[in-house]
Image (cartoon, rainbow, N blue to C red; front, top):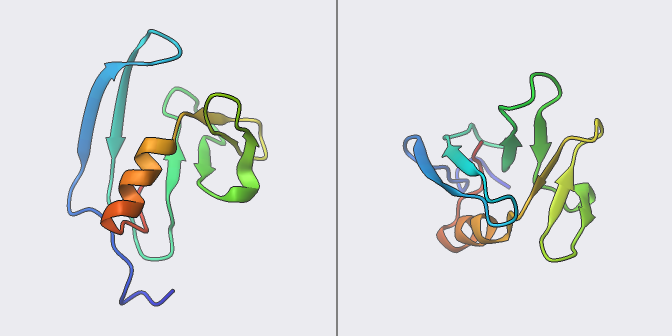
Length: 95
């Protein structure tokens, strides 16, 4: 994809709430990213190897939600609505 047609967000956005599956308080921040970054999830509760790319090859489970994992076993789950929103507004790059 040409860098001229790629989009990101203009500034950091933060959401807070209760995790639907865990019942624990959750904080999600979305940051702008450079062209060709793609959508990348960063687990801030894990120090190393904490990046998980939103790529079909990283899907490890789809029971009740989509779960992605990197090569180190770090997982993110329930990404469907965020990914749908990114798709709907044409966001290609975000962390």
